[in-house]
Structures are given as structure tokens and as C-alpha cells.
Image 1 (cartoon, protein in one colour):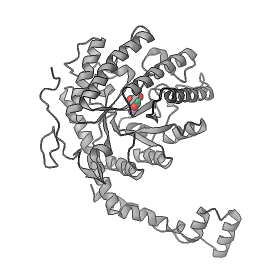
Image 2 (tube, rainbow, N blue to C red; image 1 turned 90 degrees about the horizontal axis):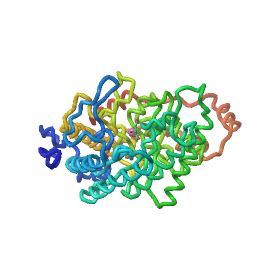
Image 3 (cartoon, rainbow, N blue to C red; image 1 turned 60 degrees about the vertical axis):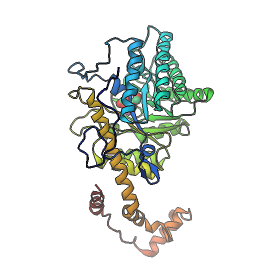
Image 4 (cartoon, protein in one colour; image 1 turned 90 degrees about the vertical axis):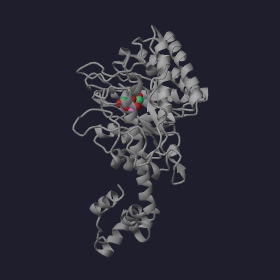
Length: 436
Ligand code: XUL
Ligand code: CO
């Protein structure tokens, strides 16, 4: 029996539509800069929030009505839920999904039983992928919920917690390969610290790097060709996560010779918690050639935690898509909605409203970004701001023809630097607003 019998397929009806169960901007086959919106945006639904989220918070239990759940933690219930998930994703028209191992299948009494449970559900996921054509954007392992990981997984002071995590990621990589996943994500989970009195930071970082190298080696061994990502987040659940922001991740990857193997999966709410804009994080990653994928959500400026709300701010999605287009668009990555409906939005239909809103916000952002690029005034201003580097002294410096002594000579001859030009921030902010 269908879980969403009242929904057939969410269609594109255009900006004039008043139908809340239709796309007004996301038109999958429409070409933008010569590529379909489907291929530009590569939308992905997350299994954890959308099919395992209950709406519980520290002050009360879950509120979500999910009539397809039988209330048990059985493999059968998990298999049935997997079919419901694909019904939802297919009706929504998203081409991808993403999951943690423990979202899709229940843990057993020991590792062997847990692995068997996972296999039983992965069998259904594979059938459903084949039936619908929906693909796996990335897989990942939950290395943070089980109490064995209370001190971290790869950075745990307990060597056997590290070993168990290795076994878990080994299986998750095999599973992701089995499902032909386009990527695999490492989000830090509890890899960080609560205080430094009990923490050997250097040793923990060395262990984290060793763990990631083992994953890279094992992927090679089994022929998993998907892209690895690391997902920055500065805090939650620990006070200080090691993967705190894009710059910290890049430094860690470079220090431990991991940069050739991992790109970044950037999440908007994590950027906010780090005191950065998403645009900043995208530019830091893009400049390093490491912009891989995005976890599309948004925080609340008045709340200091990871609220994982669906993105609806077109200004934000425009900034995201400007950076994504600038760095050549997604290859293996995509726009993954790591977002959850509010506790008060407890009906199944709210899952559709939430995703439709996020997809439309990104579709608008894409079209606006493409219009800004086609118009060219923003880029032209930015380019001309650096004109002093295009010839003369600037070009000579860039070409390595100068040192401190020759530059001193040049400035002694001139007496002072050439006058500056206005940055025109307000004019450019006004320009951007003309597209919105
Ligand atoms: C946690 C978070 C994770 C990762 C995957 O804040 O974003 O869901 O995206 O482990
Ligand atoms: Co995320």
C-alpha cells in the first residue's frame, strides 16, 4: 500500500502556480548554461532526518506521524521503511539520496549480526534503486550514536573503539560500493574534545589521519571509485570538533597527505556555527580545488545550535550557486538536503512541502546566479579591481621578477603607491538585488 496515496508526482507548474504541491522554479529538464537543472543541482534526500527523524528534542519526545512504521526496530520494519523512502523520493523527483549505515538498518547483538541486518536492508535499497533509477549520492557510517563512541571513534583513547569503527567503515564502504554510491562522507561525529585536561590532541589527530588513510587504501583495494569527502563542523556534539571549518580541514588533509583523496562536503548550518558564511566556506574550498558537495540547510541566526532547517532564502542559494558555477559545477557531489521538518510539522505531507521549498529555492538561486554571470557586470568589476596586476609592476611581481629590494627601489623612485579606487560595496549589493 502506498504511504503517500494522495501524491502522484510533484510537477513543474511555473512561477504563477498557486499549488503548494508543485514546483514553481525547479524544472528538471530546463537548460541553464547548457546543462539541465537536474544535472546542475543533483538534489539528494537524506535518510536520517526524513525517514528516521521523529521530532524529538531535549525537552520532549517525537511528534512525527509516520503511519508506515510498525513501532519495532525489526529488519522487516526497516525494509518496509526503505520502500516508503523510495516512494517519497520518486514522487518528489529527486535523483539521489544519502544515508548512514545505522539509519537504514537496526544494530544487532554484535558486529556480525549488525552486518547481516545491514545486508538485508541494502538488498531492498538496491532493488528500489533499480526499480526507480534513483542513485546514492553518498554513504557514510554513524560513528557517534552508539555509547562505545562516547569519546570519539577514530580519535578515541580506547584502541578497540578505533578498531570497531574501522570494521564499521569497512562494511559501509563495501555497502556504498554495492549500491554504486557516487561518494562517501566522513563527518567528524564525536571526533573532537570536551576539555584539554584529558585529551592528547596530537595523538588523536594522528589517529584520525591513520584512519582516513586506511579508508583510502581499502577503497582502492575493493575498487570503490567514489569521491571521499570530509564535512566540516566546529562544535556539536563536542565542544571543539577537529574538522572545525573548511580551512582547518584543508590544513589537516594537507598535513597528513590526504588532500589528493578527499574533497569537502560543506554544510550551511555548520558554516554559521563556525562564524562563517556559506559563501566563505565555498570560496575557501573552491580556491583549493576541493569543493565537492553541499549539505543544503540553514540555521537560525537567533538560535546557537544546528537547527538543520530547510533552505528557503534565495539570497543564500544564489550565493551558493554562484560559487558552485564559478568552480565548474558539481561532478560527483550535489545539493543534499541535510535538513529536517520542524517538530510542529508532524504530518507526512510536510516532508513534501519542505523538500519542494528547498528545491525551488535552489532552482531560483541557480537561475539568478546564471543571470548574474551572463550579465557579467559583477565579474567585470571584480576583474577590473585587480587591473594593476595585469601589466607593469603587478604582472612582474606575479611572474616572480621582483624581491623586497627591487620593490623598495621602485617605491623609492615613485615616492608613494598609486591612489586606491573605491570598492563600491553598496553599488554591488544593489546590483545583486536587481536580479532577485
Ligand atoms: C551532522 C551532520 C551529519 C553529516 C553526515 O551535523 O551534518 O548528518 O552530514 O554524518
Ligand atoms: Co551534514
